Image (cartoon, rainbow, N blue to C red; front, side):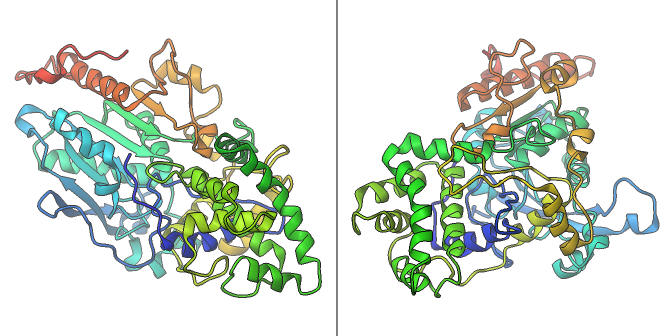
Length: 491
């Protein structure tokens, strides 16, 4: 996938985002997942950068509550979706529909940011659809974001099951409106969106012939995945980049505490790290550095490879050979030296607000820091303390077992062999969330694949070919199989 480059916007926003992830001095919560490293979009409108001639914006009158029959359940709101008609072969040829599921951010940047779709749409003659997740972007119930997020009664309709039902309703609407009832649908998503894509295939198999779930940590629940897995992968990423970089980071935490304990030590740290304001305690700096290292690892992708940039700065020691000078050099290598660091101005992002609710309700991913990492000390995931924070903020407690109850997760290989066909699980092993994904290449059931883009394309083409050859066989006017798909087989 293509990703926009890092910017100072991340520097402003990551501090806020990750500081909200720390409910107490020794308690962690859950990093966001979005596959597009735009480092949080702010609470302002962002124009769609893709050529307007290619991408059209539509709104669907969506039902607030798909699962109840109370009068208020029939309340509606406008849900946004984008459609790119450029590559579509049309309804008469039953050309496929690729539906990208928006996750915990607006979809404005999705047509540009998700290169997999535009790079491959022409070879499939596919219609590209991008559907925004409820409560994000312009798809907000109750008339305004303030009203929608006002209390647990209004925000309670903000969950994955409602989102999947939204996607189902919009896809049926699109197929009906375009007279494309025979067009096969492939659903696609990354990270949280990848979780949604895989769950959609399981819950709505009659609406999609297959799903591509990229970097989808559907097993990071209910003790299926080791809680310390995320930070273990972060540590591995830095050790792989540079052993000396890893060792310097590991030694830096005690040095920060040592300097902070001295007379005027916090002032010294503030000068050394060019903070926007004097830090009040050493953990301000520690939290900032941890956040920077974590998100650089999660989005360690070309063209910049932020982990390598940080380690290049640390190992290069351009600002001095002592530990703190090296650490600051790593920060400067990533962000530059033109702005203050650590505790500068921040913008409240709708992603940080929305994701906080989602992780306080159903997405209770138990992430902890274990032993043998590059971080300061082990920090266990304390569900009791975490739930107290959620209860204080929203008046509700998380349901840590609900995801595995509703969607499954335990004994996943056996379960998918029984009824979960045509799902590609693709993981980038540098992504810390990959530890909670499915990585079972070579599965005899053919359901779970961790492969390259070319392999994903071959598999998707085989699904569509099978659909044309068999699933539509009973129809009177069976569409012709596109030539480029003839002979394509998954391998």
